[in-house]
Image 1 (spheres, one colour):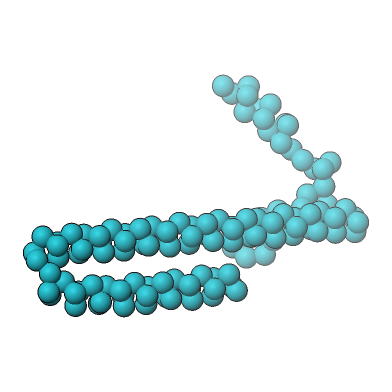
Image 2: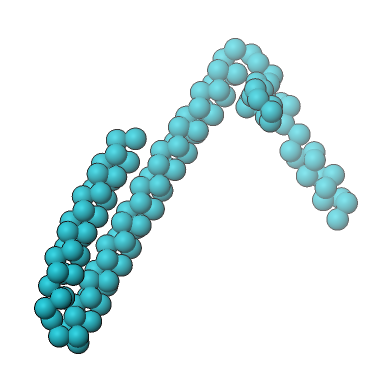
Length: 123
């Protein structure tokens, strides 16, 4: 959340600076020849696009970092649930909610190999 707040502040600051620059350029364009005004306006547009691309890349990078953090938390929760299940002799630990997924299952109850054998015979 802190990283997002810092990014938002940086983005807003860059946007304000660019808007002020754009306003200054627009005021200057009034006194320029048409060719010079077009060149100046094109340069301003290009700068705006570059800033937009940089901000978009930074936002994507921030999202990837957030996803990595979330993946790390999920892995930690899985390890803790497995350790808890083994330590307390549980055969299964089920998740609540609509999915009701199996969060932990004793290895002796793992049917993966048997199911794969059946599926491979059917092919």
